[in-house]
Structure formats: structure tokens, C-alpha cells
Amino acid sequence: MASLLETTLPVALDHLRPLFLAGPTAVGKSALALGLAEKIGGEIISVDSMAVYRGLDLGTAKPSPADCARVPHHLVDVCDLSLAFDAAQFVRLAGKAVAEIQSRGRTPIFCGGTGLYFQAFLAGLGDAPATRPELRSELEAVPLPVLLQELGERDPQAYAQIDKNNPRRVIRAVEVIRLTGKKFSEQRAPWKTDAESPLSRRFLAFTRAPEDLHARINVRVDQMFRAGLVAETSQLLNCGLADNKFAMQAIGYRQVVEHLRGERGLADTIELVKIRTRQFAKRQLTWFRRYGGCAWITLSSGETVAGTLAKVMSSLPFEKPGR
Image 1 (cartoon, one colour):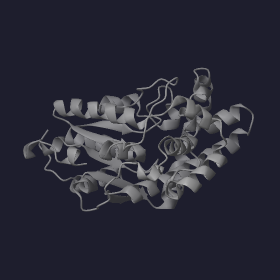
Image 2 (cartoon, rainbow, N blue to C red; image 1 turned 180 degrees about the vertical axis):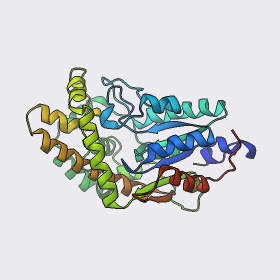
Image 3 (cartoon, rainbow, N blue to C red; image 1 turned 90 degrees about the vertical axis):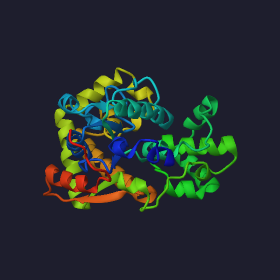
Image 4 (cartoon, rainbow, N blue to C red; image 1 turned 90 degrees about the horizontal axis):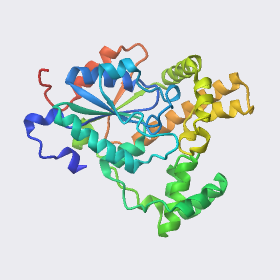
């Protein structure tokens, strides 16, 4: 973390250091990032493990062409569906984006909800070994409940914290344990949680009352389906979506694929996507609260983007130069 916040940038260029906006899906991060970038002369780095994939558009609520025309966005549409994307690639590409943005005299603004990517960028990847293809293939063939049982027996701490509905995360944890003989939880890079650290003034996390957030999630899901999520998913299946175990974890796409296979009707699928998205948002909030060092800002249902931006601007740790 020191390497990021205690750089050799002169104090006069303090505004070039990255800012971080985090929080659950549908909380309103993207609109705030756009407004903030316009106010301070920034560019947005997406922190979304699914928005990196080309073609996963509606279900990931990617920035629109109009949004990208307003403010440059980075780490969106950087990976084909035929490939896997991981935290190591995110760190490499994000570091490159930060350097490019700063070279233009602009502020990098990280915005998203993938806690693991924030952690990897800020604290490093830890000492976990690289994936071993033969072991990974073996673990992918094991039922998820069996893997969870093994993880619970060999690393109770990792078992308690992991997203048990995410096979990719569970497989990786068991893989690391088998490769090293050590607990997965002991090999992950620490993420400083001191709320008084310099990072807390540059890392803003947003939340809403549960009923407000749930209502926003429901509206977003309905909009995605009206905009053509089923048709988009059908087209992506022809492009190899079902073969990408990473992309198939994306909420919305997985449930629509099941619908297209005849496993449930459309109305039930829409309701299931809402449920899964609410559950995901809860896990995101848990992650950031556990690993924070964040300055939390609670948004209200009647609050305008302009009103929230005023809060954000007052929270920033540097004097904004005239631009």
C-alpha cells in the first residue's frame, strides 16, 4: 500500500494519485464516478471481473458509448470470451492504465465492486502459487459440496469467508492448499484495515439502506431484461459463453442460460436474477466492511447525484486544481 500512496509524486501533484470508489452493485457508483471524473479531470478504471469480457454488456451494466464519450474508461472489453481473466492480469493492466492516465496529468479513479481486484492492486497478490492446469481440471470435475467440505476441514477461516456460491473461488482455494500444503487464508496478501490510514481518505465506499438498494437492484434487473438480456445471452452462447467457466459465473447470464435450456420460465428467471443480485450485493458489502480502510458514505433514496458529489468532493484529501 505504501508504494501506492507514498509515491515520489510532489505534493503539488497529489491530485494525480488514484482515488477508489467501491460498493455493491446498483448502489450508484458509476454515475458518481462519471461526475467526479468530470469535476477533477479524471479517467475511470473499471474494477469489475465481468466487465472485462467483450460481449457481456447488458448483464454487467457496462458504461454506455455516451458515458465513454464523456469520460475515458479503462479495463472494459479487454478480454475475449474464449479466455480466462484473473486478478494478476487486472493488476498488470490497471498499473499500466494508472501510468498512462497520470502521464496526461489526469486522476485515475478506480470504480467497481470486485473486492478481490481492489485487494490485489492495493496489497499485492500474496504468495499463492500459479495455477497448475492438470490439478485445476481435476478440481473442476469435483462437485462443489465436496470441495467445500475439504476446504472447511483444511482451512476453516477461508471456508467462513469465501463465497460458497462461486465455484471458481472455492476451486482456487482448494488448489492452493493442495499445491502448498498450507492454509489458503495464510497465503493471501493482507489488506490494511486501519480506518485512519492515508488510504481511507482516498478509498470511498458507498452503501444504502437495504430496502433502497434492493429496490434499485430490482429496477436494474427489469431494465436489463427489457433491453434484451435474453437475446444477448443467446448470441453469446454461439460465441462460446458456456465454455468459459469464469464468465458463466456472471449473475444474470448464468440464470438466462438455464432459462434458454428450458430449466425455468422467464418470469421465474427474472425473479431469480433479482434474488442472486441481492445476495451478491450483500456479499460485496461484507467484503468491503471486513477489509476496509474505507471512508463510508451512505446514500439516500431521494439524494441526487449532484448532492452526493458534493459529499464526495468534501471528502477528497487534496486541493482540486482549476481545470
